[in-house]
Image 1 (cartoon, helix red, strand yellow):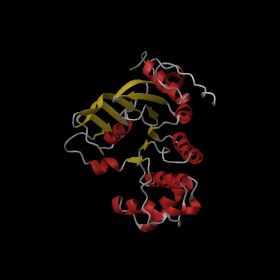
Image 2: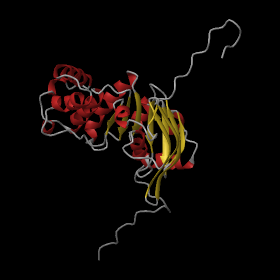
Image 3: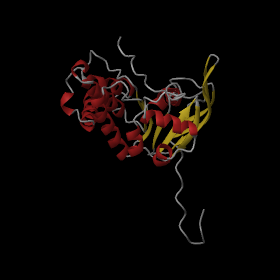
Image 4: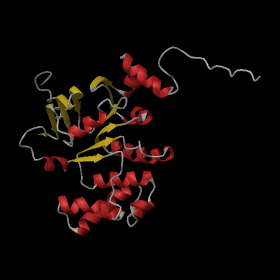
Length: 275
């Protein structure tokens, strides 16, 4: 729309990289997701937070169709993945996914782990696949570990290899399902640093995480989920520092003070004097 005659047209808004409408998922009689509506814009970083069992991981798995939604519509990179005729393998080539566990092949070297899918799925030749793999290992700070086997790497290094493997497929967006939850605390930072660089490079990212520092510093938007629904969403400052919903406030207060026990306040009883 033009503001007045002769003015240049306003730039059009690109379609969402991920568009979710009315998404529901049930396992038997248990509703895990209920009427989720959510968009992720190209280049946007969206962090999904919430208590365990709130449906965060199931939401990611429905986006990549690792779980089949019970109802609703999901569009990824312009393709409706919930359509009956969708070529889901083609859609997944444009989506990188990093899980809690690394899922590296122990009998293959790091380089072998990064080239396997490139050669089998993308039909790249060996030299091309190795060139791309080495570029992405350098990108995550592991250029010197190409010939090592996964067992020789720390957990943080293995997760960085998993990220490099996903990047080697040249995805248009990345899904991260609590990628640091299985790591020792001192190894978390190296993985988050790689993810931060991806965000700065403009990668579209949807991240399920309990790392509030990462969400505060890197996310464009934070989504809080509970009991299979989106309770609130907004910028990191709004959701994490001034949440509107009482359930969000209770969740964040428990993260900041994990020793708080719901219910009446209790005082520690002094031991009875010895007789």
